[in-house]
Length: 502
Image (tube, rainbow, N blue to C red):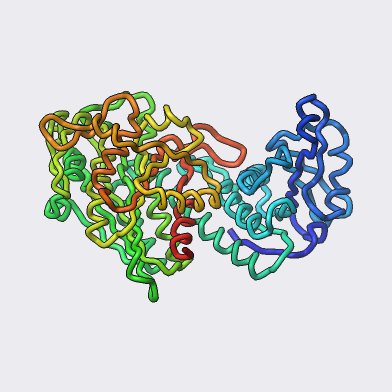
């Protein structure tokens, strides 16, 4: 997608469609009394306000978020159309909402065959922040997952113009960085979307190597013999049941001039298909388990973004990729495995496999020099019980690291919520015959899974992101298609940048 930055007045921009944000400026007391909304275009351009005035004053609109109206040949504007998108209450409107409106604009217009448009940045959001949100949001809205439909329509946005006032160089920088992030998020979504017969661990490794070659990253893909040689017993215990070879993908970003420390280690779960193993899952909905490598895909996408953004900080990206299959070679409930760290693990449930591969990934990242760790994984159904499909779960052993991540998360506009990691939960994963068990029972399942991983992060500052409920959109939304979301990529990119800046 071509991105252009314009500092002209919105009325003077020649485009197929000009998108403008409409907000409800009614006072809270008025809203409670169900009085009519007070709708106004969030723009300082008088011509844009005038073009929308008759419709907004008609009383026909409710002003609820994502209410959409398309006007043709708007008077006083050079645009062929104006798309009015409601952002809801003006007091609550933020860049988070703007990002979603930008996605909705892309999806609305491309469904009508419109391939280029301009988006007038609302005056209520700081200009650079608005430019970033618009570009990222349009990229999210531009993605569709229907690759294999023979009747697929070629509907996409090719050109976006962001219309904003302010320092043009700063705005262009914000838009350029947002484009890199948006493209990297869609790159990750592309990996997640592929069915498992077209995204095996081997293919995932090949895609990672190709990407790394394109952007200048070091990449090494280690196969089954090397995994066994390094005594990654937890990782190999999952891989041993599949005929598809496992792959340990290691990507390194080592920019000139970066300090020796810190070194960030980003570890992703890469289960390219999860049957549950011997503890097999129900058939209903199992087809979705191609997405169980979303954490790994996210880390590959993050490495792409930072290679192009070029922060002065060393980063190691790692993906532990395998299938989890039932076979005569598969591990069984009750087996004891020895992890790379030397810890012994009693396997209670073979469907709790993600934490096993991550255990060895976290330990190996430390061996490679990582001083700070982040893992991302579609790890537990329990996090969906706790937080639903709206928030990802965040766990950490470091308040300082969490504060950094929270800043990045807020800037990225992704919903996440910190959950506890108290020592009491460790009792649930104690084993009678080994050091720990790979499950802690039904209660607090997302927490005990994180507590398991904490055993391998040890004293290294570490964050665990459980994205099981947010990595896949269960239904289509106005701003995003049903399917892979690319959650956590934007937050992790901002997190890496925050480490460089602070």
